[in-house]
Length: 260
Image (tube, rainbow, N blue to C red; front, side, top):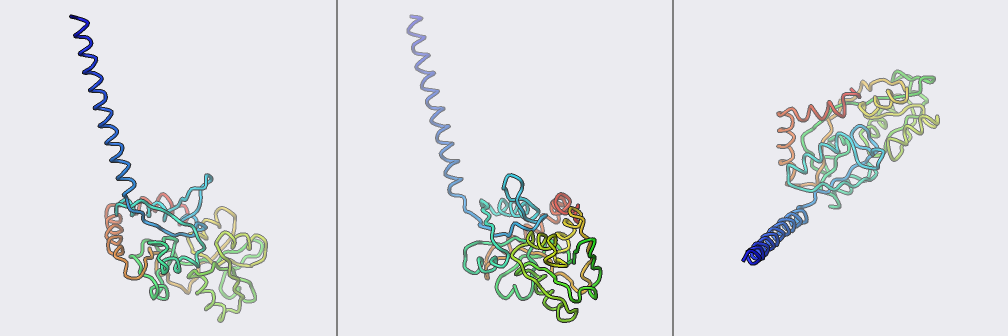
């Protein structure tokens, strides 16, 4: 009798275990399906612009824009996918519908607004000229006859073209910000003209000197979308919520405070 009872109990236990395993498998399958069904938000950036976007030592994207983009994608219910490309190709990628949005420390200029839609600005910094300490340039007037390097497609490229006519310097254009620093260290340019936040990082880390451009008022950095995108208003709401909650300030303290 006891043997029969033990057998019955064992059968019941096995059935219970199989049912539990089946439920776990169903839960796992359900979770897998949810992950697979989650839509992708494809973002383009130019990861040569610390502290906004760059790579860490393990080759992962990092920076203020990257963290902000992750929050936005999560709030919208998307999985974020990031593609790195040259800055001057970002607008074209949006126009060709290769990506859904661009975050790359991009200023929301009127010229760009003709081709893309922008979110509200999330950061303002201005522009800066930096040079070597042993060949310091500390005013616009001292730029005469110098070679000033800028990154292609940036607001600094536009500004330098205008200033060059008045102050008599040559403009040299390169593909990304890191090349500007290489050019400056190799004395192939006399001055680099960059976003102020990024420039201050190089001043602190590499011992350059610099001065603020007194002629410009930055329109502010914003997120770019294809014309007519229905994501703009949604993202503006998220940016407003992040500002009101203090989360935006926390991100700036984490990523930008050392560059202010």
